[in-house]
Length: 278
Ligand code: ATR
View (cartoon, rainbow, N blue to C red):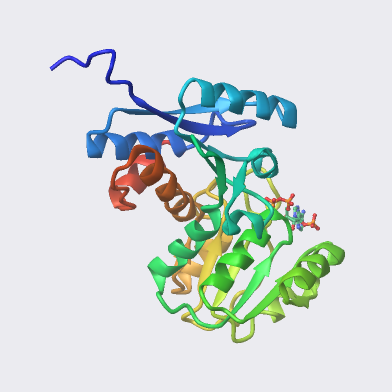
């Protein structure tokens, strides 16, 4: 039966700058098709200024958008713009989800639960200790995810020691020497790279992981390339690995469920569809 004009589709999207290479529209479109939902998920490029961001949010609300994912450089803007901020977004100081309703605009953070879920997929009890490389916004989210998984001994190493100390002070972490990171992996259950090292076009991450506990999970939050040199090395040594795509798929689940109201399954078919786009 043909759709009538009264049956308006559900609208959502991703707001960033740049955003044209985002894989999120593919994820949401696949889930909407699977669930037979009449919905559209659209990439929206918004210049880096807060004022531009706020103006676009007003427009999206006026035309009836259910919500948006928010990515670089607007994750802090999303928090500033929102009327209501969830604890999960307040703690890292960044939001990747805005939901519009009559009660106002709600900011949430599914990057943290997304990373935690990607780790849990490999091991539901991943242990107690981790080394996190990097001290930027991504590292902050990863640290909160690790805490939510019950890890108690979290070490941080970063090229700029001051940034490592700031993060360590905020979350009660141990600071390690960046130059001695290969020695800081003793007895850890998880190694996570949150730096841009190893990403396509960036210098490689130089770390010797031969001393790592064989059962330790190795994670890298980038997905270009899908398998960084660190993940290749870890996989060849038999470690369970978590890549950026796993995190990306899991962070998309709460938004889809909330805005489109359907079931969102992270599985091999979804991964294959995304890999074919890389
Ligand atoms: P994000 O929010 O994605 O974490 P960011 O705040 O720019 O982005 O952080 C990037 C991280 O990659 C930082 O930990 C950065 O180290 P510094 O704090 O010393 O800048 C790290 N990084 C980027 N390029 C690096 C390089 N060439 N060598 C070592 N670390 C690097």
